[in-house]
Length: 257
Image (cartoon, rainbow, N blue to C red; front, top):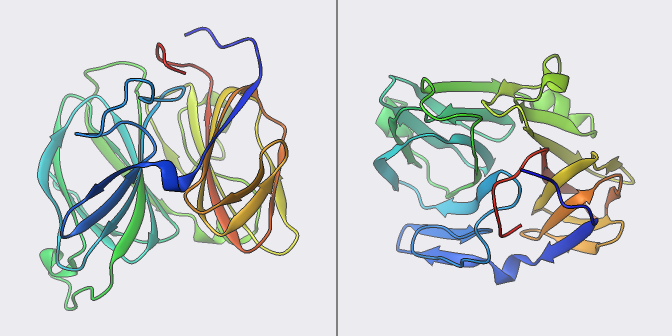
């Protein structure tokens, strides 16, 4: 898990992402996923999945299994219904941080259909969300689930820790993940607001909406990502109202980073 010694900034444009499109799903993958496999693009640091999904009303992912993965879901627009084999039922919406630890094994479904949990209305709009997977510290952990609303913190305009397993964030993180080397931060930027990227061996910045300007990378648009190695400290400023997600990672898997 040794970090690289040379600072590096690698820009990945949203239009170049791998894609899965079926009748009910428009999914764009920052890394190899499912049938879309590129051996040179499997992860960065400890981040294996950064999927940008749009699911049509009344549809979604049927019950399926996961194990030994920390899964964080971040909704941009609409509502996503989560149900799992541990008995958790809930609606994920913008500003709500949600984490599922797959551990020894868990079954869950994710749907754009509020009627599945006996809510008296059905969604008539697509749900747009980002789902991210990071590797846990160890396998065979007890499966778990956690969520917390952090919309008020995001409205302040700074960098907000969404999820973390790092000891430094024990008093500030919204939800906890089983990865002591990883943290997810978010920021909503308007006007002349800006944030500074944390220093870390590995960073992954993803623009969920709007346009930002990043030192050393230039303008970044919705869907664009930047992978940084042995770097940090750059300023990211809004060009228009924008939201960004930043993974801070202090360990890595093997190649191809």
